[in-house]
Image (cartoon, rainbow, N blue to C red; front, side, top):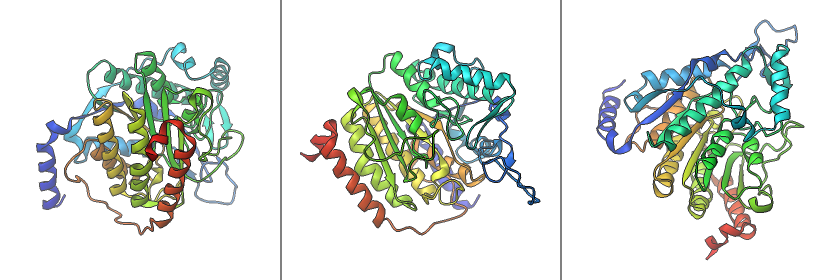
Length: 395
């Protein structure tokens, strides 16, 4: 660490009391989910390659996230909490998922596992890890609701935001964030805002609350569309919710390569006004570092600076609307090293630290925000025209 970085770290430590601490919930048993190797996430060995790669959703990515929080410059702000190893109750699982779907996972686990859908492998130990991830996320939301802390981070795998009430999808089996959101509602929260910045549409969470006006789901993602039967949702601006939930699912499909400036513009022009109008009493921040410039699963070109800015915007919204209460839930992020750096920057932002604690090892990625600005302005005009609770933004 350079002398300048040491000085910045010391300055940030001095403001720790005003920024608060990050309560991190983590259980090592989640590393037992083995995803195998092959050609990227296919699990296929074509027979003519000497070197097969690990599935992108492997335990190494999470090991680095744990270690950077333990030994990186953010460590003085981290309070490690023991997540209950008790799995969620059946009623908690059924608050989001159907009995038929849960039964199918149990059956697959009993039979030694199987490929559930493209790229999504339930192997021996996978269901136990998924239950532990859901339970860890519940421990984090309970910690907030019981008044023990305001900012909690559920460092979990396998990820969850693609898991729909009736099916697995995109490396996800149980919707960790969705189960926690429903627990918050059942515990007395009246309105919960979910902001998802993973590079892929948080279709599972959206599907779970698609008919509810108690949960605002906002997803910023690359414009990837549907990818088959497991992911029928397209993530388009027209998927707005149904019935009482109409207007409470807001999608922000961003052009490939949007970058830091484009994401900040989207957060400022779309996300912040929607959250202010919705006025939630709980914020759930769903993070995926696969939106980074160097992630094998994404094309959005975010750098540490962009993640830091997004984290600060979320923190400011929480301070204004949910008494500073934020549940952060881990999703994707598949570059083994840079994902950890981007997580570090995201949490720096959520803690609202006055100075960056860690410099970017890969440095700046060139970006052109003009395409993103045009797309965001178009989406904003569409929302104002068709979403009732946002129309007053035009006044």
